[in-house]
Image (tube, rainbow, N blue to C red; front, side, top):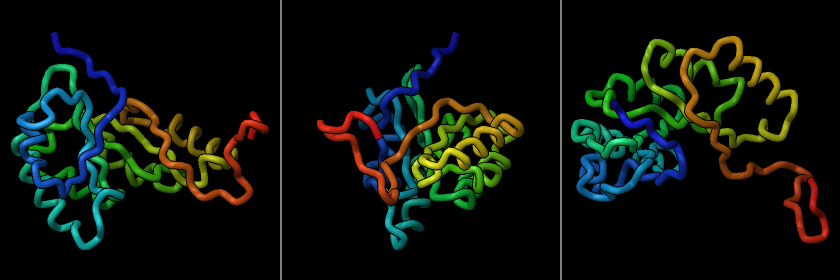
Length: 173
């Protein structure tokens, strides 16, 4: 019986990492339960071609312990489409979808609808703080969701006008 993955804390590994193949093969960081190979913020534009080549090599070597998970964080929906055609992509569990919103949900989820991959959308745009946008996203997911969602991740707080983190004097937003 297969061990069910535990989607807890994850280690993001830039796809440019010099040891990415060894990490994917379990030769380095072999005890890491959840790894996310990142092509988004961790990779500079001028390093992108090398990152894809490095990831392609790593995918062919991927191995992991039972109960571990391996995800890729594509740069955008176009990046996801490229990844889906890479040899070895079947060795990962799914994708962490950056800057996920109602405006790009179909572009991300459409190509995954007939696959076995799971997703972890990351809410990290100003939409997170806009009730109407979040309701729209929720409605969109309810009506068109075909791809299993393992978790919804919250990204770094975006720049939001007039938003201040709670302080000792203010215990609410």
